[in-house]
Every structure is written in C-alpha cells, then in structure tokens.
Image (tube, rainbow, N blue to C red; front, side, top):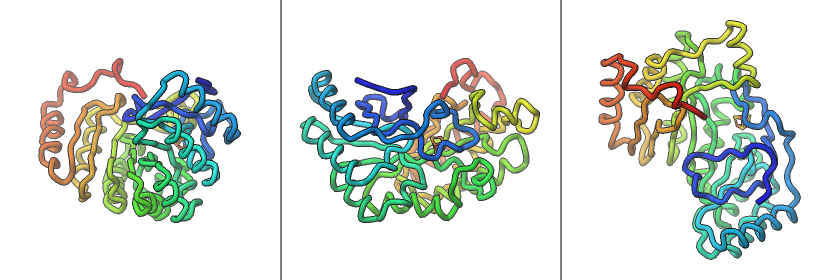
Length: 292
Ligand code: SF4
C-alpha cells in the first residue's frame, strides 16, 4: 500500500482499509490543527488511486470497510469519487461501509444531488469537524465557515442519506469565561444538526500549530482537567438531540462517557458529575496516557 506522509483516520475506522484519495487538507488553516501542515493539498490522479485498489485486492483479498483519506477527500470531483467508490464495491464483494472526511466547505460546494449520488454509489458515513458552535470562536480558529454554514453542511449530509459523524473540541476557548459560551453554543449547534454520531475530543496542541505558538507567548491557556469536564457537562446538559450516539472516549479525553441520546443523558451526566464532585485526579485518564 502506498501512502504519502502521516495518515489520519477517525477511531471508528481503525479496522478499515485506508485509501488515500487526496494528500493533505484543502482548507489547512485551522489554528489548532497540525495534521496536514507538512503537506500541500492535491488530489491524487484517478489511475494512481485505482492502482492502489488493485494492490489492496492482492494484499487483503476482501475488506468490509474502507476509509477515504486524507483530510478532505470529499473535495474531489464528484465523478472521480463515484468512479472510485464503484471500483471499491466491484473489487471487494464483502464491502459494506465507505467512510470519508469532509470539510464544511467541500460539503457546501457539492449539490444535494451530488451528495445523494455519492450515497447511492456507496458512501455510508461522512466525518465532519465542527469543533465549536460558538460563532466568534469559529472565526478565531479559522474554520472557514459561519455557524449557519456549518449547520447547513451537516444537515445537507443527513438530507443526502449519508450518516453524519461530528467532532467537537473541549478546551478550545481556552481558560477564560468564554469556555461556558463555547460549551453552550456547541450543544446548540449539535441540536441544530442532530448528527447520528457526535464525539468530544480534548484540545491537545502540537508545536506546529498557531494556537501552540499563542500558548507559548502566554496568549492562550488550556483549561485544567476539571474545567474541561465542566465543559463536557454543560454540553451534555444542553443537548436536545434524537437518536444520536455521543462519546467522549477518544484518547485525548480525561473521562470516557458513551451513550445514546436522549435515552442515556441522565446516566452520562451522573457519571461526569460524580467525577467532578470527587475532584480527584485519580479518576481521570493520566496525561501520559492521553494522545491524539
Ligand atoms: S481541522 Fe480539518 S479542516 Fe481544519 S485544517 Fe485540520 S483537517 Fe483541515
């Protein structure tokens, strides 16, 4: 298998064959993100991607899950994506899942008909980094879209019949009173989108990010662990979503909760509140075990 640079995938795609369709991220400007800083965005030639599929056939014979990388494979031409997805289903008879990273801009650039075509061809789930629902913070982190545009992008994926999985980031507003607005507005944007899956990650900064440089200059401070947990509590408390699986079990988090909303809301809040009340670091994932 041929890969260029570091390859990232959502935790739930751990067992997927990863097919690199694009190199890097078409946006690549978010102030907290280090993932594709070393890459200049480009779409790989279709023939090269199809050759990779042939190689994967020889190596795996059959696969059930494929994940299309890099950061924003949805930015490819729809006709090329359709070719790739058709080729995958033809090559792997056991295939039943094709996941893809999607930036809000590339979702908005596609027509609803394009997205429906991708769903019919076999893309089953799209992963969208929402990060925050706070309109000001969205601007500050240079996500490239407004609150309204982000909601529109998320809803468009669902309207096309593709499962929507989103991530939000605890600690993104820093150690300031604005953290409360970040948490409340993040619950609000999740309510407006009603994703099928939502995951909370905790901010961890790599040295090649703008936010890390701000932190080093004393202009940004990552909240303390129990302040992070308070953000998580506020988000869950304010969630009003239907049939949504919510998780904070990513390796960056201090406490793992997982549940189906609205049914498990009280149990999830009970767990978080008991950890906050105990106020004891021993109940948190230690920093040396945290990671991105
Ligand atoms: S967070 Fe997502 S959209 Fe932003 S630079 Fe990183 S990969 Fe690109």
